Length: 634
Image (cartoon, rainbow, N blue to C red; front, side, top):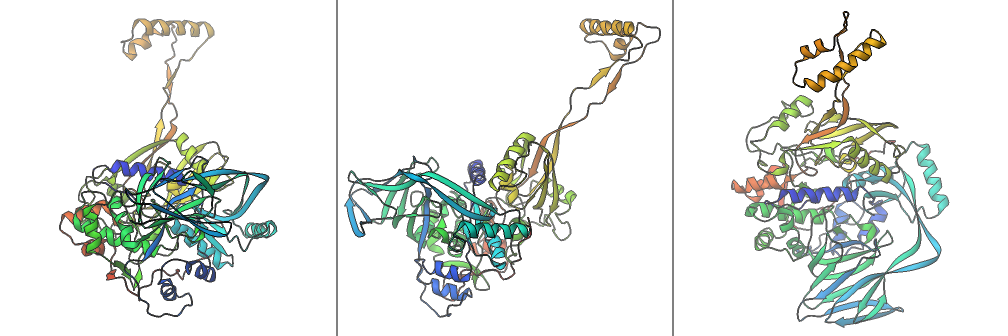
């Protein structure tokens, strides 16, 4: 999800681009099979998880339970702490309060209290023998949605899996199942013999291991797991990474190891309080009240629907654009608080299951069906919707899969709900060198066999959906053809802001060369001399005059101009929208709110045939899609 402000959409675009660029240089993701998933999910802190799993068809009895309107969430507010030896976090109590720190020392529980700062730092532990970590990476993805679908496909082939996010989303062969080098290599041989080209063994060798340490009242304790609390249930956290800075979190905090040899700082916070740190940062200031209410419903639904995302790391959701932007209470606003209170406990459902409450900054004038962006079955409520209250375009009559129709659609600048927003329409030129650099980094992260190419020769859109989204692209390199699909295009190429675009080649035409025929060496030399002389003395002479001056011979030969071949320099990406474009357009919802639409009407417009209802024990939070296909050889 993306942060949105009405006054500065460019900031949002830069945030989205930075997030894409960061995600291009790593991998992750997990959805274990039913038995393992049951074991993982029942460890969550939510008291009604058993009922949710029963309703999801995972074998637990379906019985009514009292679902609280204020469930506790586990939010990873600092991920991969320890990925840099310089990582440091300072925790402070509010004025007049104190911090309580709990941990175990020599198997004995310890509780320390301080009114001062508490520092989390790293101590690099030297290894006498290098530590070797191996895992089988089955596939790598830009999004959790595609990774989860891939995990289901691998599982249908009998491979136990888990979804991880070291940085990019990945599907791993389950580590507890494939725990020895022999088992991992036998699995790889089997995968390769069956045509898989996405799987590889990731081997990491470490001579130093980052170990977390906490400094309390001047004393340092090396600890892997810590719990932090305060009397006021509010803790100020300063992280020395530039993108995070200082945040104030309600509830409690805990530091815990993750699956990547580093740590996660997890905020345990009530759902409705969590929303106070999400809604204002997602929808921005100045949004109409009903637009903010619609955002509150979606943020609540999204959080509860996605509790499984980080099961591999023993927390539920993250705090950045891979989930929803959550900055704690520092940016809470009265407008967002009113919207959260007005919609308290309300969620959006379809057939009594929480919907995939996806939304994006700007759609470009038409929302995208789920399968246009990610792999997996379509959701009936996530369909192509022309983002306009006018009858400006008919998709059944003028399908955007036709290139001429699509270019006509993109040329429209008015009549849409997103009129006037910077990212509604955009044009980005990218030289071949930049395209090659982006693509190379993407292929290297996947250990792709063509990652060592040196030159990009061409780009081509192969397939476009009826809603206009690019489904397949081909990149011709000097080493072979690379195929990109759906949202992986945004991971592989930096230039496009969405998959709603077309391509125009950019050519460079060298100066034309003039060749003068030479009947013999003497005449040629004379002619050459006279060309130089006439050009120096007659810079404004007409072509006919110059021709006369270079024809001293009784048998002159007119100069011949050879047309210079055009040289491909790059491509211009022309399109609309920012982000995936699925579900509600935040900028479009601004317009609808200003038109006086209620939050119920806004949600119904973007999510047809859904129902708004209070959280209750009969609602299914999530169930695994039933029509997952076997993975194709890639």
